[in-house]
Length: 200
Image 1 (cartoon, rainbow, N blue to C red):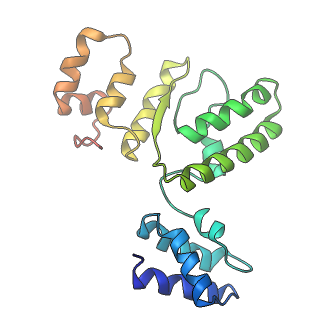
Image 2 (tube, rainbow, N blue to C red):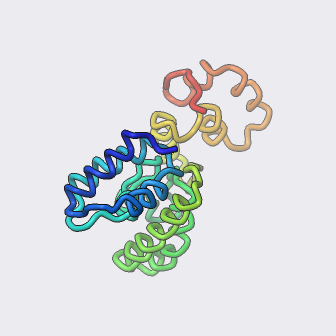
């Protein structure tokens, strides 16, 4: 059941965008949003009040949900430009990169960016429509020197656990992994003295 706060926020946002709902239309609009976490929807409605020019739509709200997925431009900026680079990315970023990778390899950065943005936007919209939570995973390039900073930042942002990052930093050292994962303080020290609290 949608809260009174959500119903009121939808009504106010729609009015500020030049739209007045009938009771039936308002009920459908709110129902379409009720499957998403209310805090995220309220945040998206605040953004709509600042950004939307024209009649408010459900897609206006959904495209502004903060569910942990980066926007298209931020996501593109995180994509490695060659096989040496490392990143920690979402499932949608990885899939969209698959569409754009051959264009990058051919040197067509503009075409690659456009293909990535189009594919990523579609994939994110589908994931949100399906109620799929964001999932982050590392993609480590050939350059070992570039991995540590990427993994540290992912831990800092809560995108990877400390234990996961430590294992990725030390691939192939099977006999040391149990010891590393047994002590979170040692793991944290290993990857740069990050906080010892593991992010779920």
